[in-house]
Image 1: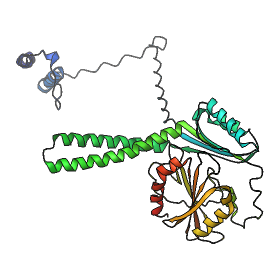
Image 2: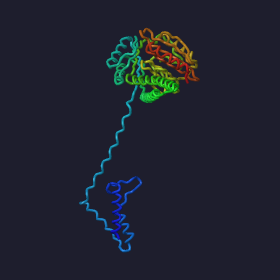
Image 3: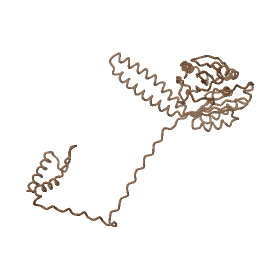
Length: 395
């Protein structure tokens, strides 16, 4: 009978709930199982056992929809949240380097005017001579100072470069963090090592990583310094600077007259780069070029041009000495790794700059190298490392 089956089902349910210690409404189900609808089970049992005795019950039709005037107002769809604004990228780190030649018969007065502009902008002088000054200016004041410098007299020549060092800085910083974490882990292993052989190997690895860290950390500091303080160099040019030059250079050699210790002369340069390793103490400002700079003003750069008229490195070195050697002191020549080199020193300055030029022929091309040290102090600090790079040649 139906009431008997319902009673049995109710007993079973009550017994299961009592055994588990929870009420039926609070029963939880393990994954993979489903909750049973006991009312539906009872109706199914009725259909199975009493279907011959009972007619099917027609389903009631659904109620008609309410009139529009009585229908519940439709809720406005919630506005979709606006997508978060994309975070700004890292602030760009740019090193500006300006160089200008200004014609004037009063070189010392020009230098003094530039120094005043720099110091008023919160910068400082790096090196200073009778007719030349090199200074560092906060990057946010550089445009202002540079514009004012160019109004101090007739501009003979000028150049302004901007090197974005953000990617180099980010890459070096990540490498520094990775090496630090590696060294910390090795030091932890060293503290727990018991075998002398293991200790020795760990100490050697820690020493090697520490040396790499010191080099990379110095490069990070240099890039940060260059991005914070831009550099400008101003040279006073006497009206009769080239009065002693009475002959015009042959075709293809005019670039010699544009050479300067501070101007990155590349008008004649070809797209083919000079590949040089990075000297110790320098950072690479432009990954596409051989252009390096130290935090204290030493700069090295190289470019490739046509070897026309055809000559070897010694030929081009002598051509430069003959043309501009009278304006500078020293003029000592040397050779290193296929490069023909000459050393020039500023005339008459208390702390003269030092300018090295190198020439190397590679097939049909001439490679030109310039290295400028603000004083002989920087030359003593870096030049052996530069020569070590040149000893490996160029390609």
